[in-house]
Length: 169
Image (cartoon, rainbow, N blue to C red):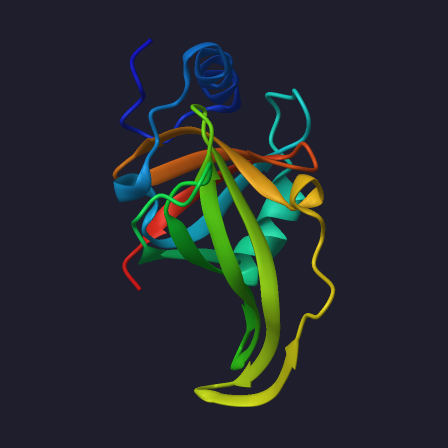
């Protein structure tokens, strides 16, 4: 199956997901690094988008930022990433920051958050370490389905399917 160069539909993403489950997605380090803005969401095994939820998260500028911390493969894990999830309303931004790694042939981007931060414009106004970490098998993850230079598709641990667009920032 060829990857769509335009933004894929829900049905196309489900087909790409079946393909990635069978043979892996081929999404790797180079494709992940950057800032991604949430574009669309689908529920479990549905080709119909969750329009209202996705619209709200777009208005809140939901983003995922991934950067390489260490490229040397560790034991059974892949390269270590820094991972940041954030939402923003006007000048107020809520950030979750932590780390992640790639695992398996599909692969899974497994991550964990170590800090929660509230920002007002460029200033940090509150920061809290996240002390309690889930066991490795209970960590959140994204099963990476497919990517193109301008988009990334993944299914989260909770079952939702997300389409992210690469952001210039």
